[in-house]
Image (cartoon, rainbow, N blue to C red; front, side):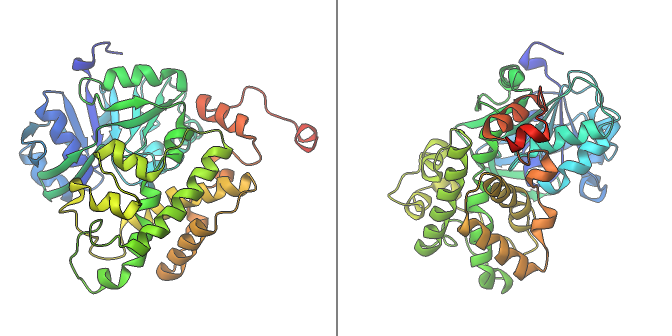
Length: 377
């Protein structure tokens, strides 16, 4: 493993909004960076001319080393693999990378949503990967950004601070140090349960999208946060946030409110979520999805809200607001997100106590598994 942060070699997985912004930034900063995308159509122009033009909060042009649809070529020789795809792709990507991962490579999910690092770590092991790999997850994506073309992106703002944790948790500081030359904004969390339960996409994405579905399906262009989050929708977000924090407290996780996060990340303050959002200039210009086939539903419901609800049920906690949004998404899309989503059973957390969940999150396994008699006792 390279010890100097400025010499780290990166791979960015995914050429969407976040992937283009991140790969372009890393290239602009002078890092060696590869870019992978599953389909060639999206990166055809970059294969011919591997440069990404950035505008907004970051201005300039970043040169890429390799642009490819071959996952083996993409991660070969890289120290840190930055995954920017929706959480819907995390399991499949882990399966694809498993045969080619080398010792001491680091996978960082940007972000992991809820329990993404646990899913990827478990999938790597189940796929036969025995290498000494570190899987980390960011609490949220570091940029508010949009792709403006096949080889360009606009970064509207860069967050002041983003929490990050790794599996195993004892490697978190090493990961942050290696990322520091590119992203000094990353700060350590206790473990991946802290990053997972401070997942604010769960609060800000599904509910406003579903509750603005009439405007979205009519094709009406509007600013997602500043116009789409009204006082009444803001009240709903506060109820969702209160339930998220209740689950976090039951697990002994250090959780901050969505309002505090808006202040920490953007310096936006207010007496309510609605007011804080209105006072956040970083959200200006961010428009709503064009239709309901958006990651704000198909990613954030099964991979953000469902695992919070499942953890709550495992702990005997009711989450009526969260469950209402999940049911609404199910009815409006015809998809059963309960079945698709990350649950405690799929993650290996069913029946575990809060202390055992933290042990599993920190190590990727339990030192001593309880017998059935111990569980009953």
